[in-house]
Each structure stands twice: as structure tokens, then as C-alpha cells.
Image 1 (spheres, rainbow, N blue to C red):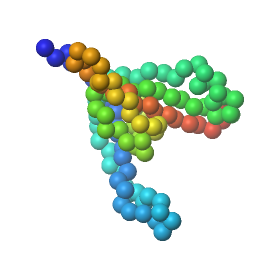
Image 2 (cartoon, rainbow, N blue to C red):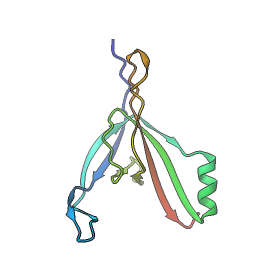
Image 3 (cartoon, one colour):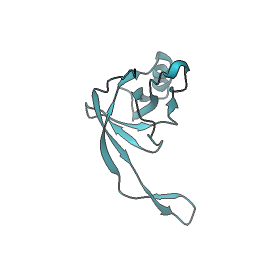
Length: 118
């Protein structure tokens, strides 16, 4: 019997295809490709992350998005159901490697930075 975790939240995931390199060796990107995806949920940032960003004079919002899929590239963006846009911040963490065949999915770190904390 397979345990299925529901994915009730719909997000828009935008990736930018690499179309070449500049003379300096930097990646050149094409127009973003956006698709709708379903995810399991979100977890807010910790108090330490919030205090550190306030000291820098910025508002940094970090979330952890839980999903069944692991294909969320670090240079992509995610638009939440409420319209806020976040960047994928680092590699996806795989939690499917535990015992007894339990596959809870992946955790994707999301980050949004605004200058001038409210």
C-alpha cells in the first residue's frame, strides 16, 4: 500500500532556459517559461533569519516549500497563490531516502528580499 500526501496548493513556476554564453563566459537566458504546479505546503522562516535581515535594513522572507517533485532549479522563481514571488534559493533537499520505503518528498528553499524593512 502506497501512502499519498495531498498537494492542495497551486503555484506558478518560471524557469529561464540557457540560450548561450556571453563573451565573458556568463550564461545568457531566453524568455521565462512558466507552468502551473501543485505543492504540499509551506513553512515560515525562523526568528534568527528574520532578526538578521532586519539588522541589514532589508526585509527577507524565507519559506520552505514541500513538494513531491525535485526538479526546481536554483535560478527559477515561484509565484505563490497570494501573488508573492520568491526565488528558489539553493539545491532541493531530498527526504525520500529513509527506511521502510516512506517517500515524503522534497523541500525547496524559497527567498524574497525587499529593500527597506517595513
